Image 1 (spheres, rainbow, N blue to C red):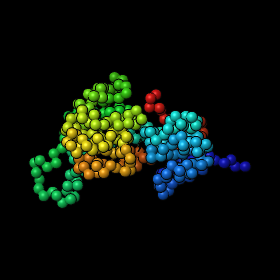
Image 2 (image 1 turned 120 degrees about the vertical axis):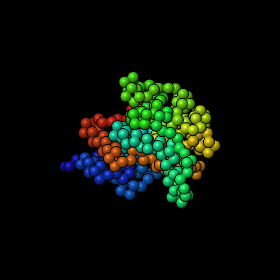
Image 3 (image 1 turned 120 degrees about the horizontal axis):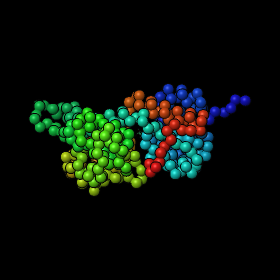
Image 4 (image 1 turned 60 degrees about the vertical axis):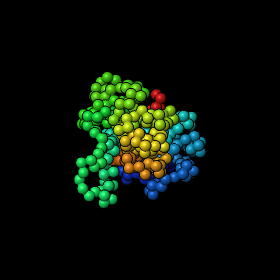
Length: 327
Ligand code: DGY
């Protein structure tokens, strides 16, 4: 008798290559309409499934795990995994993987792009032109902030932070300062041409502050009114990490009052909803969580997630298990 293959659920629409690879090993249930499921709908679709290829948009918590006792593995198609309740996963004996490395370089490219767009007012300029407001060249039209030779502050110096530091230091001659839970070793610091400083010094010195740290309950609103008040009024803030790291209400206030020059945001606290105050401000560049979005990178992420499921099924070992942020 043919043995029943384990079931794997894809929570979102993915690439045909991913379906093809998984279908060789599993009974795959996908989401061709790319519908966003409620937690109850997710639980319903997870019934009887052995594995799930999830994205950062689905919360896999104690309620989901208790309702899906057959689930053994969660392959998260993201390097971030704040959508996973790690304690609950451990309690239920469910393994979890993420997708480090494959997205580092394209996310770093995007970080530089968002920084440049924000500091040099590129979106604002485009809106101005499209609105038919450009009637003459003017010496002081849409004056931006310098990027080259300025000081970049990076909060969170993991792989993506380091890749951005290399671009900034070697490509734009920026002075790179960073703050992290732990300083990097000297050789890595040298390769990134970056210097470790306290968080307070980072806030004070940065002409541009880039957030690329993993989001945990411990760093919720780690950039709030008090931190924004320590920054230069001419500074820009760029968030590539997770919306919850920044108190968006305080940020909107700082941007409106001139306490901060500009912000570039790829992630939002309540995404895909964006705070109306932010939508109304001209000095914010807003993008829909696309820092890793090139075809090659998103495909690489999805295939790595798929390969984690296959490796766990075949050998009982994940390729890239999530590492607890405190580890
Ligand atoms: C990540 O990999 O964590 C990204 O934010 C998902 O797009």
